[in-house]
Length: 507
Image 1: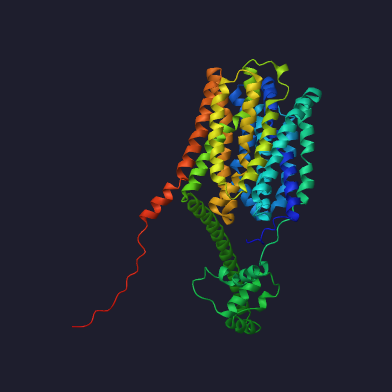
Image 2: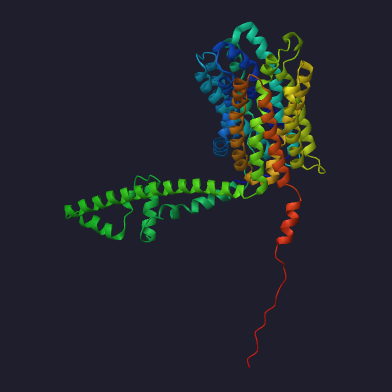
């Protein structure tokens, strides 16, 4: 499917505004789940690793299902997917208020809310990239700040709602607020497709070949016409018969046995046609799956893309846990709660919004390489994570939380980096694959950190592990993108000399 040229404005700014509020409403609670995490520890009295699965599933399952999310947006469009997801997220939050155990929360908060957020994220990013080209970095930066602003506001809001209405009442109110996504989704007008009429005409001309591919012999024109009339549901298709069958139909007035044979032949032909259609549908679906995996393999032949998927996997294993666990880190470090004027999750959300917008604007400058900018954020994040165990006061933790939040704003330029790596035509497919591995990292990161604490009763080793993971991903991506590889490729290319061959003269 080919779209019109991105307008880089006009209704695109309405799309950006609506996408901002969609991410604000859907990601506000999951990204500030650290506030709920502390409450769930007290309510269910389970281990930190086991309880951390709730928040990690909410953030990771939507990314794990990114290929399915991408396929849904491609098949149905951003608007229908957004409307459906609004009900899914609201239902998940409301059901979570009645959760009798952690296992129920795994489904209601982890699966339902996480999958709904994944659908909404894919829909907003895809439709924004379709509307913007030159200002794509700015547009993606604006919409991605919606989740960060939501984290900042929802962290304090959920804390206040818990103190007034309790944990159950907080989830009910937050679930009701998420229904506003429905109103936002109605305004996501899709970008018109280019040359739709010619494509439909071309497809309609190929219908006979698609349905007759399984015939052992090539049918004549009269048989083709018959079959098309049967497929279209024409009630008068019995009148369309081969010449031999017409003669039998005339003789059937004299001989009833001939008429009976003619009807049996018609029944047999109909059953054979239906069988062929079923075979063709099955073959088409099989081809689609094969094409999908072939395209996926082609993506991994790009060394930058392969390094990018390793980097995003390691980044989410190490970089996501602070947003979920920093509140408990402060509590485990015996930091006085009265000194914690602003929740650390709110600090992360506020600085993340600034980071997303700033990095998105920087990515639009021609003199800045967006890929190297992304690598810098990975390396700096690794260093900040290793420094977390040395923080013994709220002020130090707040500074590190702000640094990690700002650097986590690299999510705004990640679609930009993916687009420049594989191209806009492969963005939806490639982004779905990368988000799948990001989801694996989100699901594994917080439980691993929680298990480290349950094992050692301290977060020190856990955050060293997180920092090393992020550093390894950044260094791998840096090595692969160095200009050294391009120079080696040029040296190994065969010379492009042209030779002229002449026929030798006879002796």
